Amino acid sequence: MKQNGQAVDVAIMAAGKGTRMKSRLPKVLHRLAGRALLQHVVDTAAGLNARRVVVITGHGAAEVEAGVVHPGGGLLQFVRQEPQLGTGHAVQQAVPALPDDGIVVVLSGDVPLTEGTTLRALIDACGGDKLALLTIAFDDPTGYGRIVRAANGEVQAIVEHKDASEAQRAIQEIYSGIMAVPARLLKPWLAQLDNKNAQGEYYLTDVVKFAVAQGVPVVAHKISDALQVAGINSPVQLAELERAHQQRVARTLMEQGVRLADPARLDVRGELLCGQDVEIDINCIFAGRVELGEGVKVGAHCTISNARIGAGAVIHPYTHIEGGFAEKERVEVGAGALVGPYARLRPGAKLGDEVHIGNFVEIKAATLAKGAKANHLAYIGDTKVGERVNYGAGSITANYDGANKHTTVIEADVHIGSNCVLIAPVTIGAGGTVGGGSTITKDTAPGALTVARAKQVSLSNWKRPEKKK
Ligand code: UD1
Ligand code: CA
Image 1 (cartoon, helix red, strand yellow):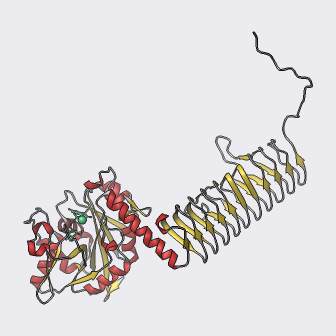
Image 2: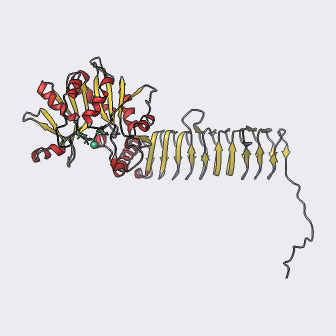
């Protein structure tokens, strides 16, 4: 994005230790709504069409650098801050990576829910020639940098809590940690920072003093939505922000007409797109990109990732749908299909319209055409199933020979009895029937009944052995 022709460059501070997470995992890699905290921030930065996205790493640098990606496949730049001497010192490390002609937006890798619209408003407030600070008023501002204003309301300084006087501590307006500032102003200010303060750190917030001294206007863009500036320091805060975020997602879905049995018991860890009259029962988890067509019903306790569910389909309780991100791996469920309870659809399961998949049925990399049914206790993998096929309880496709996967083809209108093993590669001809308990190793002719099991034998008057005395 450009402001008066000026490009936007983003610097994300992510070098801090995150001691209070009490975790081996670097703080910014902990997940909120299924994405690393830092990934949220990177995605937001990319959404601004930032020219450069520079991430400042330190603690767990290698792991952090490997743990995030540019969503548009663009370049993320990493600079390292070692040791960590404060937020001003952090941004100093990014100076070589920030061109002089841009507006720099400073973000923190542990503040995941800032919205793009808020940052755009902040960039507008900067306007290419001012220092713009994102601020908010808190009932309890303890710990934050206070926004100190002159009698006429102009911002004069940010004073850190530990350096603040009693009077300053009474100020409720705080600095969020997010600013937008022209690089050509920021760079000389960064060069002047010192660490003569209560924490012995180089404070980025001291740039406000320099701006004021130089007559550069300082504007506070004040918002009221605390979630957007909430930082994560502990597992408790992470869980609280997760819940607050999920409730917001739930509210948005309900406003679109989705009926949630209980908005407090929904988790969306990705993108959930719903048609009209979708109903979702309690404790469902949606991950990746999930599309629910018109009138879809999802029962309680389902987990659904990367799937497209057609209009009117019903997903009964405790069903696991585990699609992959790529088109081939995505799970598709046709219109009017019935799935579950306790069904498992793995990557590449493609169910046509009105397919029925019942309890304890697992489908992997298989296409089931319209009206096919597998109602109980079955496995179908690497298989093409034709229309109206009925696949019996306990039957499986033996698709793996220990080295390679092979394909099974079951043509239209076939009936597979119970407890059959179809050893791939094998084709069951259209309209054929496979007798229960058969192990099928050779292709079968269309319309034929095929039975491949030992003949039943009965010995009359059979005497059971008796226990020896
Ligand atoms: C900072 C602000 C404070 C503001 C608050 C909002 C300063 C001096 N103070 O305080 O005014 O109210 O954020 O949350 O900027 N980081 C580094 N390297 C460092 C130090 C920090 O990368 O050397 C990173 C941290 O990992 C974190 C971010 O910078 O992501 C903010 O650091 P933090 O220590 O949380 O700043 P605060 O003291 O809370
Ligand atoms: Ca902080």
